Length: 459
Image (cartoon, rainbow, N blue to C red; front, side, top):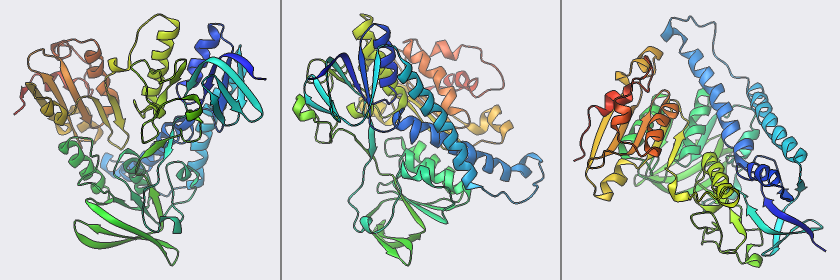
């Protein structure tokens, strides 16, 4: 006989736990199912550990730059990779255990450790337990996808999860992929001291970004000694005397690259292939992404999908916003929608990229009349004073409504400064609101009004 609940939550990523908090506070008897680690990708193999590694890599980088600031080096900068990993693991453990303790102590919540699978539109089995509820929420996230590369199964390769267990310095790290995961790990390990080669199938890195952003990021990484191969294909991998050998076509010419280790960072796939969604009647697309409407309801009444598995955003902040949307509609009579969300994210190389709204390419494709303004970080006092002048900022404005369409800040503090633009966009206010604001000097944000004062037609 099934154990009855008011709600079942499958997965404890960035939406599930907070939703459990709201549901239980509303008096709903809630079952929370987690098969692995509390916190999902972000806490265990994503944001939290990678940004801890970014911090260690930046410390090493700044130590080497000491003479630039008049600091005499004490000796050669060397990495204690076991200590780097211990620091990262402790940060992850604190987040993971704190989240687990919160869920376990939550009134009206019962936590089940195991793999949840649907047996019908209202029932989920976890081991020997059969659970039943009128409301079921799926928050199962995603995992690294494996590309069809000849010989890949003949070499031990890393992905974004398994590289978290590395406590040594790879001599030469090969990275297959040119997106965010590839670039962040590429810079991290280069700063740790590894030789790094990035192999990208596309014509350039960051294919979803504008050409000027991608070019600037390419230069930033190359300036640190990272080798980058773009426009590649016809890959074949083999074990060559204990090394990883990658044969490929690079801009039409044959090329071999030999490294000590290989990181595969070519995309992700949703964790939906072993949930029994067919037994519940929940529709997915050909990639396994759960189809949802503007309020995250699936094709089956009473079942919602939140986070990366619904294809509406592969970020912690979008997953958390999914929780807010579901809770608002279900508990607050507040009709919030996914379509109200403005695209925003960051690339955590150093300097970081902060992005909000439309890209320049998207604005051009829309055919609307627009204005554009840019400013190099060499003309941002804070960047000059910090000795970090790589990158630039850019904003696009609708010429008729004066609303900001999109912006990018590639430079020191870009991941934080972008929020001042994002908030104006959410307020649906004209760009003049921020352009006329008085900001603190010296900051990066203070140059946003200066940049917007120089808007010109987008030709």
